[in-house]
Amino acid sequence: MSEPGRLSARLQAIARLIPPGQVVADVGTDHGLLPVALLRQGLAAGVIAIDRRPAPLAVAAANVAAAGGSDRIQLRLGDGLSALRPGEVSVVVLAGLGCRTICRLIGAAAGQELGLRWLVAQPERDPWLLRAFLARNGWRIEDEALVADGGRLYTALRAIRDDDDSWWQGWDAAERLLGRPNLRRGGPALTALVAHHRTWIAAEVTALRQHGGDEATLAERQSWLAALSALDL
Image 1 (cartoon, rainbow, N blue to C red):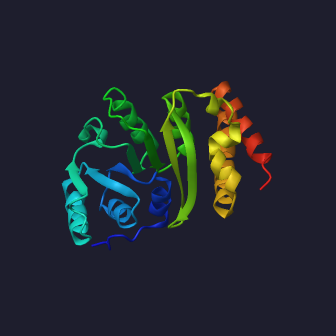
Image 2: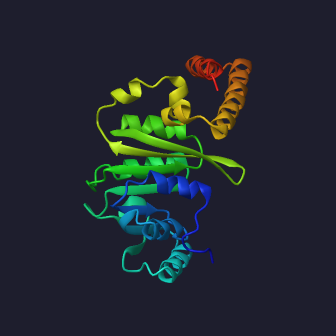
Image 3: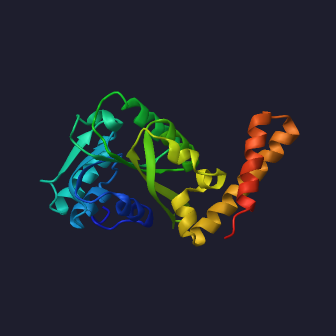
């Protein structure tokens, strides 16, 4: 059993982005380590830990009990935000999921009037797709965190409800790809992320040129490469 309260670097990044003093829903909680750590560190008033699989939820229950958090951490079996009732939480965490899964869960909950104020998400890959989705669906990115963990790069972001998407119109191509907060902070993880993006975008440009791909996509990818090349890291 994992030791309650011990968080990996990627989970620490998520914890730092959660607004303190709120009731938080951790969707896809797995072993429940994040909820336990949030309460131990005094970062949450309460947590609803949700998972759609009984086995990891049972492990989470054991971890919560061992940490003495059963009175402030509710465990629920359910799929995504459908396990929540209106007004229960102000912050939802969606981590360790694919970008498209995160977008699907947010979209499915749009008409439920849950009263969510913040979203903290950490997609497995393609956070640039999530940024664009949030901008189109009434969310504004407040902050991000980029960390290396287990040989991989993870981007976590915090967004707040805001129907004004003018913030997104002010972001250039590099900021949309990498996240404005990450660009402002810099660091080795950002340098590694830029190199990663240059590699896959260049490969995609080559493939589009060779196989006669969509011209609009080709132009977009070329603009991305130009934006990355212009960065002063």
